[in-house]
Length: 313
Image (cartoon, rainbow, N blue to C red; front, side, top):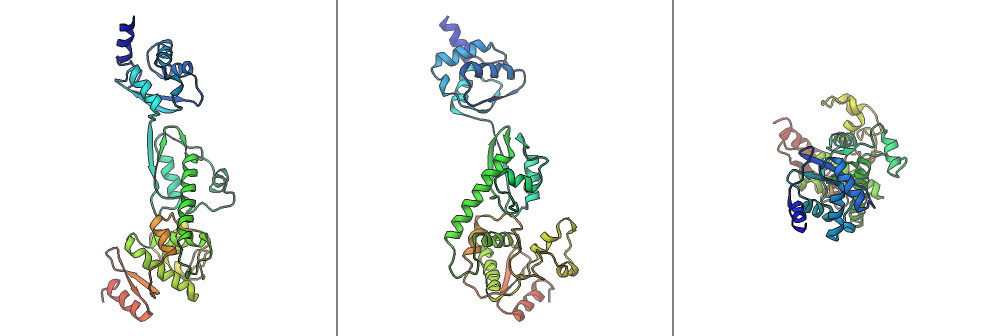
């Protein structure tokens, strides 16, 4: 009898499909776990699994979660998976510089992520996350997040929201006291602009210096990414002079100071750059065409840089 039991414990289980998905709810008894496994598509008597779980002495150590049982799994390896909490995890990456529309699109496409937010407006979604009345742009930290199959997208967003809170608080605590930014919110907004202005990490502190210097003297930021954000779906990929003159709350050519909200998700480097700008008097910068920027302290020097790098003169 014992020999037959040992053979069964070490023998591959028969599955209805190559991979059987099993969700174990919190507080499930060993009998309930055994029944759940067999109902999911593992072809073995649930009573056998139940007695195996009990006789192993580990039935109380089984962890709730979402699991994948694959071909070749034995009762022994199955129990080990459940006791170790070796859940079926997936991941989704939220990219630095993305806007919230791109975040929502990525979550919709993420495999096996339960779309609880589907049908919710941005405002309703933020209310669900406990941030009623808060604009969602820039509130979520860009990172790769793992999740169990069947997890809620709202739960993942809650994690990203807390992560941005923590990263912003950490950056703000390290701020240079001479910067003109008054609140962490100001830092988040500026960091979101820096993130969109350059993909070159080594230039971020210098770009932060330009914008901080402009804010100090009351000079308009005049940054294209904010104008593009304000245009929304009307932007066709070509920023025209008329766009720079069309006043919106995000047009930093027509309005002074920072825009009313972030325009993208800033990463850690951009957050730190916003509050720790480089020691520079630069007020202007222009793209060199290789991903880096040329910085200038005067308009004359800036115009020469524009002629060189933008007009080839």
